[in-house]
Amino acid sequence: MKRFYKDVSVEAAEGGFGVRLDGRAIKTVGGRPQVVPTRALAEALAAEWAGQGAEIDPALFLYRDMTDYAIDVVAGDPAGVAAEILPYAETDTLCYRAEPDEAFAARQRLMWEPLLTDAEARLGVTFVRVSGIIHKPQPAATLARLRAELDALNPFELAALRNTASLAASLVIGLAALAPGADLDALWDAANLEEDWQAELWGKDEEALERRALRSAAFAAAARFAALAR
Image 1 (cartoon, rainbow, N blue to C red):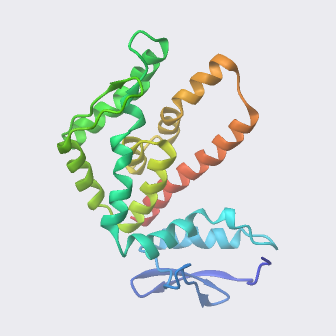
Image 2: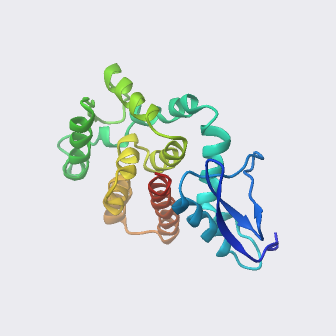
């Protein structure tokens, strides 16, 4: 699609702020007014529109896509979206370890255990650690506490968490990425520990590195989106 506008601006709107293209307000994919809670997020959305060239590239609309999802989907059914995200805790990557005598298990303990113990202390829960790939359920009390944590998030934070948790295959990492001052590089490294371990053993694959760079950018964008929406 060719670029159909010249000027991009941000203006106050009922309930928050919105982007204007040549003075016209934007609507979401679902046809709702695209109004966000903070000027900072609106400015980030405007930057996506302003950064487009003569041809519009939909892949560059990371913030717009999350905004539309937050408004069109999450705002209407936050409990349903939270229920879709919670299973990332039931099969959290950080809980599934190699056999204790394997070298990889030591690396997992080094990088993953601090994240898990920090989450346990902050939330007052206990996670079951599993050696091998056989699924073991997490305690009902842990899942209930995590669900309460999700229910306390606003639609924009839930939209961001949907991305961080799915990209990391971990609700613990997904939530940690939304915390103010989070070390996103360290969290992303933890999420990709097994991939890095395999690369150390067998060498790096250029296509895999390109995919990882794209996923890393999406992970960081989701975390920043949540921060901008606060």
